[in-house]
Length: 163
Image 1 (cartoon, rainbow, N blue to C red):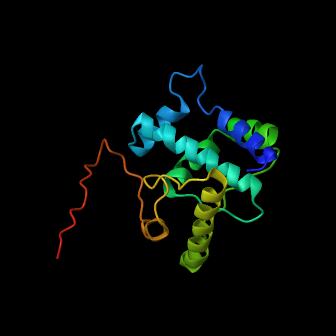
Image 2 (cartoon, rainbow, N blue to C red):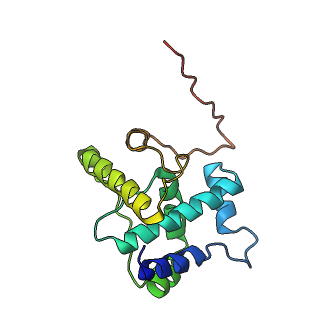
């Protein structure tokens, strides 16, 4: 990282998503809505901040992992924090979330995700954690998600039988 990038990374890393005056903070909501432990949610938040940093320093589009995307979706709901405090005041750049336009973009997003992982490794000098940043094939293939009310529905994982 350049000196300027290191300074930006420190600012992004130190940006607080949890409101200390809130009885139900961002990281707790993220954990609840995704059925994650609080520790995993905090790790996903750090990875989200790394992703935002990559967006800020790159001229190319970046594609998040699904876990990072979940953090991003939630942060977008906190409009003051996202648009004013983070984009406006901290990085002074509008960072828009562009949804996919369908299957015809699968190859594009596969390439963008691959490039995001490579940029991550170059800038942070390590591989991204695989439990938050899966490999390209897993990221692109595991896309069938449904929001489920767990008070009304039981969830059972599929059992994979070996041939």
